[in-house]
Image (cartoon, rainbow, N blue to C red; front, side, top):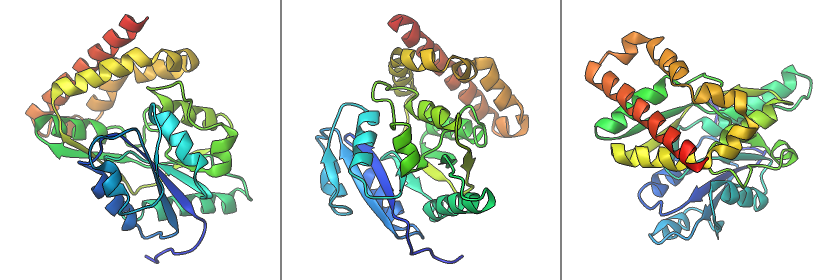
Amino acid sequence: MNIVNERPLVSLIIPTKNSGRTIEACLKSIRGQSYKNIEIIIVDNNSTDDTKKIALKYTKLVFNRGRERSVQRNFGAKMSKGEYFLFIDSDMELSKTVIADCIRQVESYKVSKVNKVLGGVIIPEESFGEGFWAKCKALERSFYVGVDWIEAARFFPKKIFREFRGFDKDLVSGEDWDLNQRINTKFKILRINSSIRHNEGKLRLMDLLNKKLYYGRKINKYVSRNKDKFKAQSNIISRYKLFFFDPKKLFENPILGLGMLGMKTSEFIAGGFGYLFKK
């Protein structure tokens, strides 16, 4: 494969918050990309660990901004010079050709559609981590690759991102889906095959449930705007259909499969409690 060293400039925008455990692996994966014309922008939310110190080894573009990811991402986009934006989280690692593949997807679409603009690119995710629950999360995520109502774009042309005014700053939960769906009403969104690896660390079930409870309490605005999409995303039967569509993979390790189903059911219950409590 030829290494791509030419324009256009791609801005990678990473919101952080006490991300010292994962940020260096994330930044190393970016520096190891086959596509070299990039800039890295870190937008930190008042970290008290060594996140900023580590980030400064890889980029001078380190800023401080709160309050949630949407605000951080939009600020990062504002400070960017790239023609394209790639938004990732600090616990993600890119496989070597992610950026090059995104650029090729955009450019090939322009050629095939006579200079039409692609709205965004979805990058599939794989999970890894320590312990039983991290393995359950990795199994769960493996069922979502290619599923339109779960995956969302992370790579956008700057002019598309700005046309749709970026992420909704008032959304804490579902902000990536929301932007994807707004863009998709007017522009095509495609996928690449190279992936992002999501470092879940050492997962504890209670941490997962608390996270879902928190997001459930914050999901109301997203629901009011995306009712039809949310019905599928929040429907446990639809999710179970995805899992049981491939029973061989689900129960290749029966204990892991049952653990994943139990974990996902518990997450749905926690998210539901959060949503109902907020209402």
